[in-house]
Length: 299
Image 1 (cartoon, helix red, strand yellow):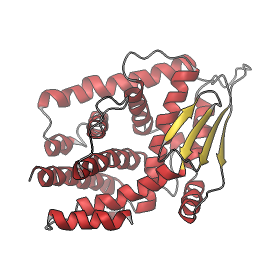
Image 2 (cartoon, rainbow, N blue to C red; image 1 turned 135 degrees about the horizontal axis):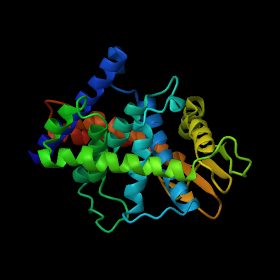
Image 3 (cartoon, rainbow, N blue to C red; image 1 turned 30 degrees about the vertical axis):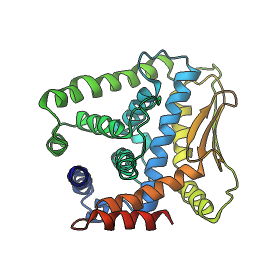
Image 4 (cartoon, rainbow, N blue to C red; image 1 turned 60 degrees about the vertical axis):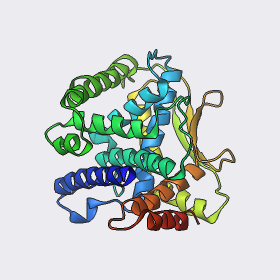
């Protein structure tokens, strides 16, 4: 019963957030992203998360909280900033990317509950469900009037919601502004600065070939590379590498090689999470049918 109730709450939040996007675009067809769009949106957010690690490491920015939490905040604020130079043509909007990424963490948590997985309290990352709530908190803090129903649907206490605006969002927004003001690239400066390039290594499977083609066509990595080059005076050249990883579905910053590594396996995981979300959000069915749907999704 608890799992079913929680699933309904999350589904209501997802529908509400997507309805706001639909109202903004006046296009009912955008109420829910397609599978490939969901994958692109999550890839964009993850790439920005790893870029945050690059910025913290390369510019030696001190952080007094968990660096993973800080990277989550910086990635989310980068998308909520409504930067006109960071539009995503023929892909997904910035708000859609935030909601899709938050939804992916929610689905990861739901899957962990269904599978009875051990909760990794020791991990450097916050729990998946905490990452979901933190991102939704930043979304609310970005525009409290527009996303008022987020508070109601998640059942957040009024005091906590005030913190989303006055503390979480404003603090993260100031941090991003400080980084740009302090380490921003001066267009008229002759000082050297690092470039950011993108490499797509040859995929090893047909699924990964389709994924690589989709990401390449979306151009989100090139957009991030251009944005970083034009915004920050990075001390070294950086490469964004899409590759097959035998270590599993992950992404990481390799400081020695100056590479952001984006594994095709992780992008495939995003596609799986989209399908799993559909299973978890089925209404009027038994838990057994949901489990059967999840089993089919894995095959």
